[in-house]
Amino acid sequence: MSRRRRSRTRSHSSPPSSTIVSEAVPLAQLELVPDVTPEIRYATTDMEICAIHRFLMFVAFEVGALRCEINPVKSLNEIIRVATEDAAIMVMRGDTMVGTMGIVRPTWWYGDEDFLTDRWHFVLPAFMHTPTAELLMTEAKLIASAAGLKFLHNGKIRAGKDGTLRLFPRI
Image 1 (tube, rainbow, N blue to C red):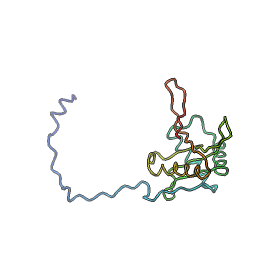
Image 2 (image 1 turned 45 degrees about the vertical axis):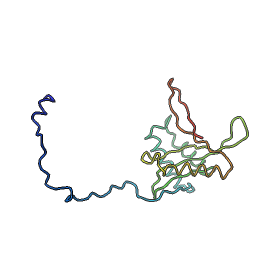
Image 3 (image 1 turned 90 degrees about the horizontal axis):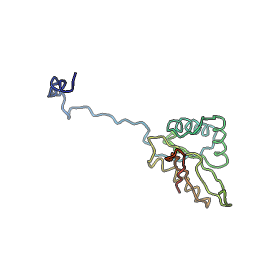
Image 4 (image 1 turned 135 degrees about the vertical axis):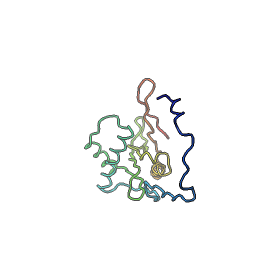
């Protein structure tokens, strides 16, 4: 049936509503994440380290950030190393992890000065570019400042016009 014909057969007026706006029942607000003040926690227990690993395997995969197949043993060992030797931080809303960052302390390849950078940094998509996500960056900068070091955020990996992957760090 053509578009023209449908428009001629369709009713041009809506049937009268049986309820008016003032009589409508108010809708309850949909709450997906509890309205709790977000907080930073450091991963110190095996349970927290495993929670970070599960979070990263899910979120990194879902946002397409993985550049090769996951090796679950290697990835868990790296999270354990970062949590025990450096810092693995989580941003929590109640008991729900909504983001995590692993902070490591490398040395510049050309000199003897150390700096801090993120080994990983992921936030649930619903919290990207929000004050909750910003807590991770703020904490990383505070850790660097307390250590007398600069924090270099790895930024995003983007494909160049020639298909070469390029890292755009944020200082």
